[in-house]
Each structure stands twice: as C-alpha cells, then as structure tokens.
Length: 208
Image (cartoon, rainbow, N blue to C red; front, side, top):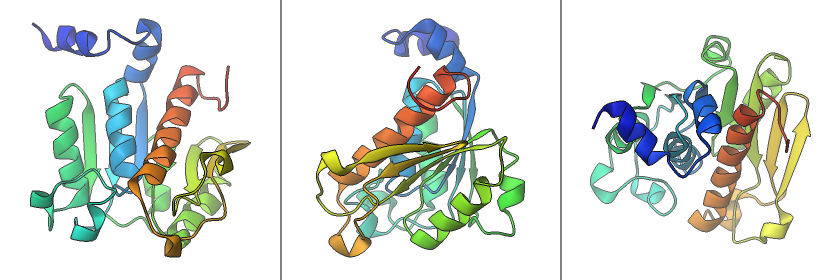
C-alpha cells in the first residue's frame, strides 16, 4: 500500500473534499503543554498537512496528569517529543519543531509561519502577549483559550469571535483551582474544532 493510500485509509470516515482542504493547510501551535500537545495530535489525526510547533520547556512529572506525554519521557524536550509522537502516529504529516520561547522579540518572525495560529500557553502573561500582537495583524488568525482550570461546568465554556480572533474558555477560573485533564482536554478539543472549521470555511470563524 502506498503512503497516499494509507493516508486515505486513515481518513476514510471523513468527507474527502474537507480532508483535501485540511491537507493543504499549515497551522502553527504556540506551546506544547496540556493544550498544545493534545491539539497537535487532533489536527494531525484530522489530516492537517503541516504543523509548526513552538515550546522551549522540558517534560516534568507534574505535566503527566494532563499533557500528552509518558513517564519515560520526563526530562525530554516537549516540542521534539511531540513531533516524534506525531511522526510515528501519522508519518504523512509534515511537522516542524522549534525549541524556542515565544517572546515579543521573535513573535513577528514566528507570525510569518502560517495564516492560522493556536495559542496554547499555560500562563496569562504569554497569552496576553500573543493576543495583543495578533489583534493588530488583520491577515493572521488566532485561536486562544482563557480560563481552563478546575473541574468546572461545561455550560460555562463560551466561544467568542472578534474579527480575526477566536476566544474559548470560561474566562473566570484560575490556576489555583488546579489543572485537570478532562477540563483541559475540552478546551484543547474546542481549539482544534475551531481550527478545523476555520480551514473548512476557507479562512472564516464560526459555523457555515
């Protein structure tokens, strides 16, 4: 079986025309922790053609309750481990991995990587930095999550659209309420879902 036939076999339960759109898109994920490591795998499994990953952290034991890593990978680079997992699971996906911290100094260069960006940080300062930057970039699109802590109610989660920005979250929980995989994974799923809808809709947010 050729690589293309294997790819088609994996995606046979999806709409072929939509899968073709996914295959032609490139998405940049900023952060490979609880959000990013899960979003990356979801987009790869859906057949998004190219992913660009940024994270400068190493895997710690405290990450294992919610991030897509294993006990034996503690101490390794998050971004390279994430790439390795994606490469082994879906080898037809192109993955670029950069062990770099996203800062105001390199964000402009990073923003040239693709049209669509997913913010997947776990601290408010980095989230705000990225949000403030992309609010000024009308030709770029950002999906960002705020408020993903604790064991809250799913009915509290909202999806809001502001021009080129999509915000997801309950917008009220804080990290002192704890981080748990069920709630974090819901946020990751919604970020991935909004990204796939954006691609399906030809670069527009929301339902069409």
